[in-house]
Length: 72
Image (cartoon, rainbow, N blue to C red):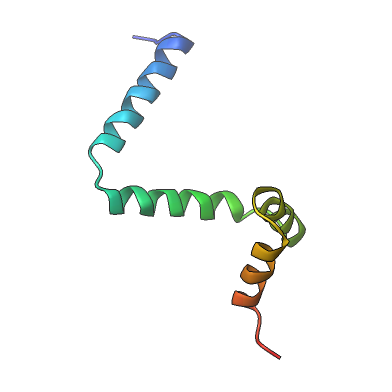
């Protein structure tokens, strides 16, 4: 049996729903964390800084930068 594009999309959607429904909160959080890390693994420093600035603000970016750089 070969599925149509729409059927395949629905199958994928239903499967994702099933996976999510069977997970506890800790597992969902871990999955989200892993997916985000994977998505950000291929972007450079300027891209991540720009995204942080678009979603938050300069103060938040500064706080994150301070958390990964040594204090002077």
